Image (cartoon, rainbow, N blue to C red; front, side, top):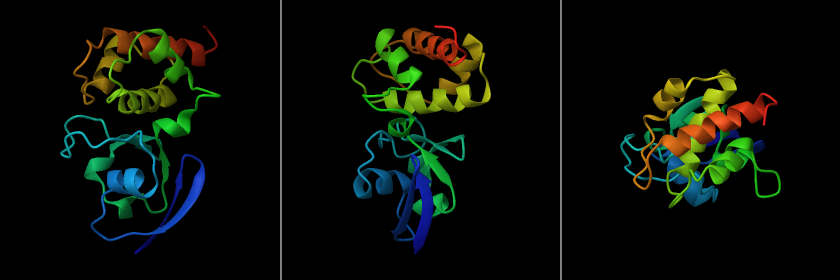
Length: 156
């Protein structure tokens, strides 16, 4: 089947098998490596993407469900030349260790900050609760999200 969607600002038109999962399409067919298949069952959050601004787990979605939608991954937020404040804050606050979970954490946080400019520490924790990190505690990650929120509001 043919699907059309916007991925990180670029229009896509692809033929996909009806049983192709979104995470596989993104990684294997489109070389978008931020979303990772960790658990394959929606438990770890490593495959997080924003679909029409909503946090979704791409391992639980069929590629066909992307048809007509706008998809944003960590790569779509920024790059090495123009990093997103979340990328910068994660680096500055030591919120990245092995890096496996980081893109999913950043995407989940971006979804929150797109809706709420001044989230509380508890709101950040709640949003990130579906994203697992095995390397570090979540304190630095939450601190990074709150710091990025301040930058996005114009307060470094």
